[in-house]
Image (cartoon, rainbow, N blue to C red; front, side, top):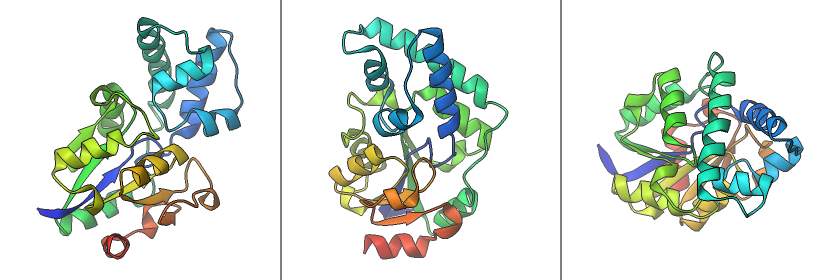
Length: 219
């Protein structure tokens, strides 16, 4: 295994293009609780963070920890049921992972999602065996754009942050990766590629990415 560099993947919007399913789940959740927000508000203010931040945006800062846990579990259950028969990896992902495996590159997932969602996605696309390290919401105290989740992944995979490259689809996630002093590639799923201006490189999907390009960006 080449431990000199590592590739760190966000999950939602990177391994799978699931923005619309999260949006539908939040819409259904909010209908049940007589709350509302627009898709643009969700994309700009909610997606890419963690559930405590999402729920405080919707309900206000007065939510108790017990309410946050209860509401979060309710929303994620709705999401998994909506998405269950539609999960597909982003185009080119499996070939790109194979490319990294051939080069002996360490791979990690760093996500604000709860572990149940991580297992749900990895089981659905058959990729559980592909990642040496998985950091989920239970392992961090601060959501993106705080860099904690990426720094935790680098620590666990034993690679210096400056030698890590992050795959991210959200503006908060790109900011978090930059604050972690990592290079970042934007994935144009949740946002149009033209919006991902802070990333070092931008792709529409993984068919446009190779290990050679990863090496060029890191060097």
